[in-house]
Image (cartoon, rainbow, N blue to C red; front, side, top):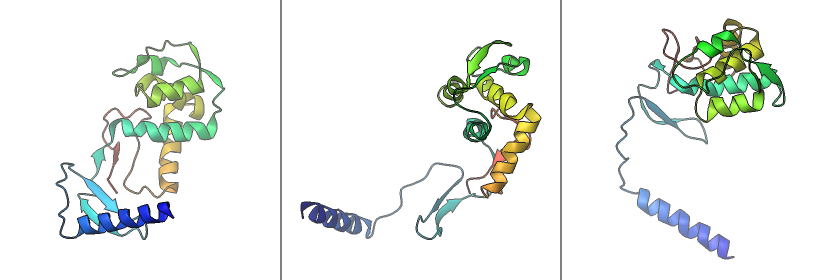
Length: 163
């Protein structure tokens, strides 16, 4: 009974505050807000403009890697991963490390060397892995997304849209 009353009060409060309320100012250069009920676009700004996606890339890297590797697999860091710059775990070529640790390194400190190691381990090469990433994006209906690498460093054609 108390839960029902609390829900009713919450619904009334939200309804009352929504009447006459104006939407907050959005600072994002591109965005889209869609209804979770029917997918209707409620608000948008440049939702279909391709933009660099940076380390958001690593979410797809992790997803595709987990489709091909087990968390307990232990893989070897390839030279290409050890050479990648910017955010790194300071992995060394030839080092052995678990997929679980690489995923943590990829997603928490956003380490480019960890993402690249996952890509090579899962795809056999960066290029083949990127093909898998683009195939997965297409399967998910991400028509405005195109990957050129597994780490997200800027590269022409490595883009996504808010949509």
